[in-house]
Amino acid sequence: MSAPLLEVRGLTKRFGGLTANEDVGFTLQAGEIMGLIGPNGAGKTTVFNSLAGFFPPTSGTILLDGVAIEGLPPEAVAARGVARTFQIVRIFRSMTVLENVMVGAMLRHRAVPKAAVVAREALDFTGLGRRAHDPAGQLTVAEQKRLELTRALATGPRLLLLDEVMAGLTASEVQEAVELVKRIRDRGIACVVVEHVMEGIMPIADRMVVLENGRKIAEGPPAAIAVDPVVIRAYLGEGYLAPGP
Amino acid sequence: MRRRSPALALSLAGLAAAVAFPLLATKVTWQNAAILMLMTAQLGVAWNILGGYAGQVSLGHAAFFGAGAYVSTLLSVKLGVSPWLGMVAGAVAAGGLGVLVGTPCFRLKGHYFAMATIAVGEIVQAVVNGSDALGGAVGFNLPLGETGFWGFVFNRSKLPYYYIALGLLLATVGVNWLVNRSHVGYYLRAIKDEPDAARSLGVSLTRYKMIAMILSAGLTAMGGTLYAQKELFIDPGSTLSTSLSIKIALVAILGGAGTLWGPVLGAVVLTAIEEATRIAFGGTGRGTDLVVYGALLVVIAVFQPSGVMGLFTRRAPRAVPPPEPEARFP
Image 1 (cartoon, chains in turn yellow, cyan):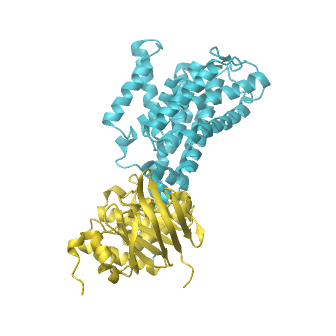
Image 2 (cartoon, one colour; image 1 turned 90 degrees about the vertical axis):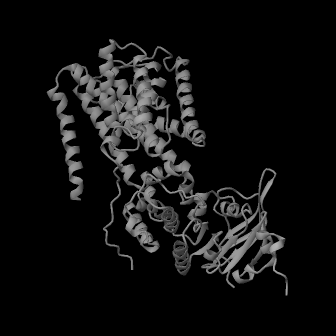
Image 3 (cartoon, one colour; image 1 turned 90 degrees about the horizontal axis):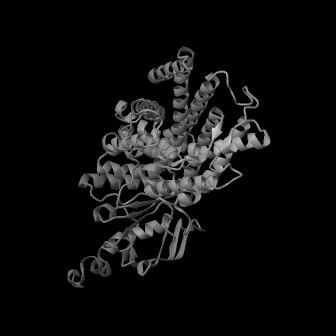
């Protein structure tokens, strides 16, 4: 096995007396899709915020291609090739769809005309090309989530952190999103996907990491996770455990 | 490119009218009002880089205006330096002051930033008031020494001041235009809309806010030097007052913050209103101007948050070069 793209060791984050993450660790290979799941409040978004530099972890190491990035500010992490979306969409509402994506593209291409070309390509890749000149605020919720993803993609990342991009989508929109994440992976971009929509993440994840109360309780391929008693207990409680063979 | 020609034609017509105006309107009072209008517009356009595009509403810009007025005046009075060089020195000093102000204040968000800048304005005013070396509350009379272009003093005609004010305004609009078209303009609007999202895309908030601050403060200071040379008298009341800070912000907000020509429009409207109230209420009684500013702010906030420009454009025009509609992605 080659050296991992992302290696997280002993990640702990405390807010005062509240421990949001405790000793979380996992690795991710280039071009891999990892699902990060867990009940509400398990600490999934906190992991994202630590990875993306939005706050420094209390302790632990985050290595990107072997280089420590924990404690770097978000803009520095982005420059090293980590892009993210937000659980609650944060699009630039005073701009058009194309301009939103151009802001992402400008990380690697400062010249405005070049950024426009790169942004246009990214929009066509994610299927938002025909909306390019519409004001971003006019998009549907599904389209806004796709816009955020496109904007993150335009920064030219090695690692993409997707925070509930499928929540609130219709079944067919989930299907489109699944296909899109696969095509992103096929471009060699590794993805960490936080998701509650299981039919969205189960078919595409190479590996799943399950969090509960800030700790990692399980890790493995989706098929194994789906029948793992520890995971079922965490989600549904004791009573739903199938009687063992 | 053809689609741009109406805007271009309008700009050229406006420019021609601006150049011809003082030659046709030869009454000194009219020329004076026009110079005042141009100077006010220049300050609004300069404020707009920080307050409009970057969304960092400053209510302390008089500090930068005063920095320009005082630096060039002191250099000229004490060392005999040409006010043109003083103008550059004032801009540099104001840029430095901007960095000093921005370093702590950019950590504050929204209203808190605005409140901090009011405090900065008041502090600068208090310091100058209490300093004999800076003329204290009395201020300075500028010497009527060397007249002509290099001396930056013209006593035969107001025309040179008019054209210098026009040139400075155009240069300031030009800086705005360049900023708006470059990645800096996109980043500033992104920071204004969603700062966290901007950071996640690699935008350093402090760095780009600071760029906006330095440009805005420097250009405001140049307006300060022009004011000092035109009036040949400066004191804290005329160059550092909080009401001046509010007026600078109001010009941009009234016309349309974050638009290229909005502050110019705002200056035209505000100067017209000020002149009208001066005639209506008589004299330059202290206070009526503040009443007018307050009333205008309420009206804008309630009825027209996008300013006068918002009446003309449903959607703010963008400086984006739209790529050709045919996608060339394989």
